[in-house]
Length: 262
Image 1 (cartoon, rainbow, N blue to C red):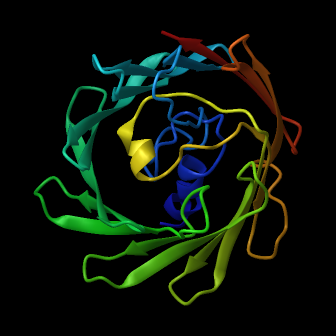
Image 2: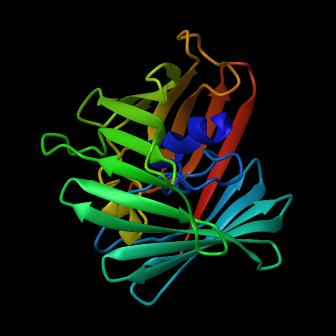
């Protein structure tokens, strides 16, 4: 469970150069793709992300340019697929394996103007757990609190988000059910924007994020986790869409991302 908790903000808040990050869905290496922002009339839609030359994910859209499917790859072979179904003000995400077997599904829906709930279901339709995003009228960058509940409505973990600047740089603190610190994540962003069409991102308010310039993962003692922390350099095309990104991790390893658009 601790790994699941640690990576959730990486999909929601980490790096507007991490386009698979749609919320708290577990994906391959969770944080290793691009983040996102909404544009009502984008010139491009993200088609494919490659890491060190190998395909990491591909995306499909409907006739209204809304995201309908993300396929994740390992060694150039599909191993997981997410399908997005838009139903009124709710969004259902089905996750299946490489042969199309449904693994689980979740449903996003607003409870009020400042709360969005995500129900995670088992295959038999029973509730496995649920998340609650809480927003503040004074904060436009994203959620201020994210709570994780058991089916009996007891909290088993939470996140607090402290936004650091007008670019929505953020310090996120993960807490256990007793309020003790599990880990922290510091994300510094530039003032660029990444583009992809998805009502999910609008619903959870990921619509004004810039590309990550540095990411620091911290343990409960505020010690930096070298293998997860990095500095990043993004190259943009003439229309300010990311074309590539290089990451240098603090343990000396490197990753190179390239982005292809429709």
